[in-house]
Image: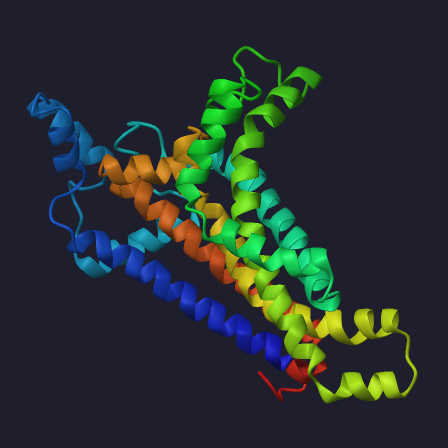
Length: 328
């Protein structure tokens, strides 16, 4: 319990730092949302519209920096991130609520699948090394993992969508479908197939190499030789000693990967015009939509911190030395 309380305290402190930086950094950037709106409409906004926008963004009576900071914290607690510039007057929280399920559904599921597939093949490659398939897996994994992410997405798009017409070219759903019907699910899966394949194929190789190296390190430990000398079966050695100890180092990277899931796979979502947070983040950067950028960055930071806290909790469950404070 002291271990988890210490980690929770670190989580709260880091979150406060992230929130504070999220408040400070936009104020160091020249200009403000009104200036960006005026530039967007090439100066065609009349003075009344500028005054209305100034009130809408809360820039008419800002007060001191300290009062702005506490006002900012108060709005965060209420989930109020202001209004988007590129999609004015839509609240930023509404945009995130619309985009987040698509990103979590696509990138979250594919990250878990790629981790499971890569780790399983990595375990097989190390445990059965010397076999033709086991020895062929690492070069293939290195090739897939080093393949340019954007290039592979464009290749799939050209071959499977444009040339063969097996999958839709872009978007997330066909129009005019009733939600949750079989046609809706079929359309959702067809649209998600190419982005999902891009993420799984290019990232599974990295998990394979990581898991293979972990298993190879564990197999050199003395306690495995001792386990074999005691006459334990290979299956028991694999499940009880090799897999458990080799999996622990991968959990840290997996937790970080899960945290970044909420940011979306930006390149993939751009190529396939998939309406997730990654695509909205790209549009926010291009359109200088500071409120939306600020909210998505904070959302990513929160997700990474929570994911790391969950991984730390799992570490305490899987490794007794962590609970005892010997490695924490």
